Length: 330
Ligand code: COA
Image (cartoon, rainbow, N blue to C red; front, side, top):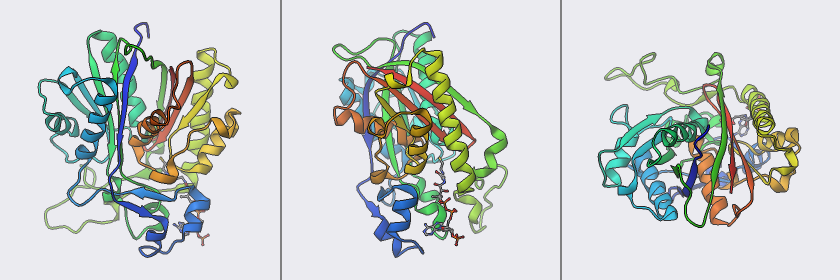
């Protein structure tokens, strides 16, 4: 990409209610020990009754605006990555626009499951390349706990609710530069059946008066996903580093999708990036799908872990299958 693009600010939001592994022990046949050793997750946040994806997304957006020193009226576009929208229509992006008290923006949702944030970031790069004055709000927000089968212990312990946001522009903030140096994204629709929420769309429609079946909730083949996730994230990171002429030892931080600590460790190992350079916060949030990477970025930023002069490698994997990587330079 010839036009450069920059992140002006990061923001995140997680619902107040916390569900610990110990809380889960009274809901399903599981233990804190099993969840901790198999996944690294200790707790997850859960939206309150009536709290929606756009509520979480709007709060993350406001935090990103504050971090960028901007007001909602400065925005030109809203891209929202989610696989748990408030509704089929209107889009969560339009609902967030309304909650931010603005109108007249281009506002649209996209669904790349857990990879949604990096997909949206790449589209934002395209928008600022076409329009040097654009200020694109990229939000990734999920309320996956409403799409979990609480009778399926192999999935319901993994996910949590949350939102992350970033503002993308063709020019950096004064005094702080976070360049989106490159993005590389991929997918393989043939693997879609390994991770899905198939009910509620046109293939398995909801009919008035029907009871809702298991297909309306997350279903997955955990072991298969595990293998594909490690392989795909490691490969796409290697390709991105190679095409940018960056050596593995020059990566200051690897910030991967927060799905499972064992997946994260395996990716770090395959890339030869030591554990102390790998950012992990899934113990607090679980897998928040599209929100995971921007939530982790906002978390790292709030801990002053993104100072000037760093090369940060983001990578993600999700349903579809979709996966990708991005390089940030501070
Ligand atoms: N508590 C206790 N036991 C559980 C359990 C739970 N929450 N969930 C599954 N088990 C049991 C299984 O029933 C199985 O029992 P069995 O041996 O008697 O049949 C046993 O634990 C092992 O199950 P298995 O599925 O082989 O475990 P695993 O080591 O593969 O770990 C996952 C399961 C789901 C944690 C792991 O496969 C994973 O994380 N996969 C990736 C999923 C993911 O990240 N998806 C989102 C991608 S974006």
